[in-house]
Image (cartoon, rainbow, N blue to C red; front, top):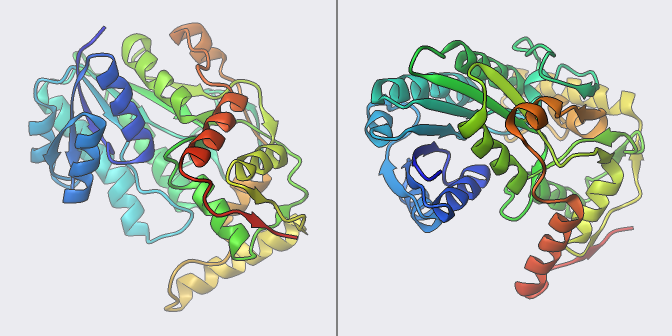
Length: 337
């Protein structure tokens, strides 16, 4: 049923796709935007931009006024960064969004979570929502997303319902993180499989992530978290190979021992924290975890309670990316030995 929504992170990958879906179904959407560039992206997606950011509770409250549902997609992303940036973007930003929406009279708050909030360096095998959040993770993104999700689940009250949707490895047209990062690694000669890359992984096309968010807004049980994915897990090496192939890029057949890469990540992070080094370490703990650990997700709760089913298959998503590249003129390809 069409309604009114407030969106944070609307200029981003998931947030932009969410706005386009909402608008296509007749929703009225406002989205907070912290810059002229963000305003333009939000407007192009079909929402009304409202200038502000996650530090400005008043601007978010004004933007959320009259909305029945809020979708919180804004987050500080990345394998590496300053603790204060992750704290501000993920923890404080979520707390501010919750306060603004509660004060504005929003009925339901839907938070974009992540399986990374459970990561501490061990595989997640057929994991479900009973697994504990890990605010103690040594990866700042994981730790702060865990704390953000806990804040959301704790904030529910009469008249203010909170729900969390956790996609895993979100991909598809408009991706600004996974595919661009892989392409950059290949073209800079820094790509290698860790331990062969033949472990299983769950993935979530952006359309499936958006489907889960809309179902959670309509049917999610207050105070619950829901995993959503593309369905059956895939072999990580096969998925990445196909993903890069959509851009005409052949993956190098290089392999790195897991123990060595983990040691390099630990040493690199220690050096970057101790010394005034620019950028980020060549390898990070979170990067190693995401690329080398089996991560398979049980989505039974979403299927049973939300009526969730993937709306886009992996094969369809890959075809979509190939078609988009072809429509854009083919782009640059890379053949790496």
